Each structure stands twice: as structure tokens, then as C-alpha cells.
Length: 46
Image (cartoon, rainbow, N blue to C red):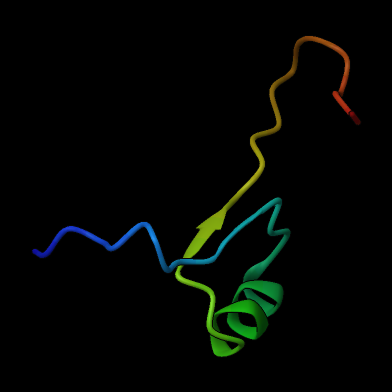
């Protein structure tokens, strides 16, 4: 597997579902981030 060229990539965090992921990937995004829901701590909205 080749190492990615981090000078030219797009990353999106906070993807909610498969439909949104497909839309983002079809727009040219290279990396997706999915939020983790843990049962502790208050949600960080900053």
C-alpha cells in the first residue's frame, strides 16, 4: 500500500451515516471521520 500524499488530500470529520459518506466520497474527499458516542462526559460542541 502506498503512503498518501498529505500535501493534497481532503479530510472530513463528523460523518453521520452511509448516505452522507457516499455523498462526500463522490465529491472527492479522501478520508472520513466518524464520531464516537461514549456514555460518559458531556458532548463537546466547540
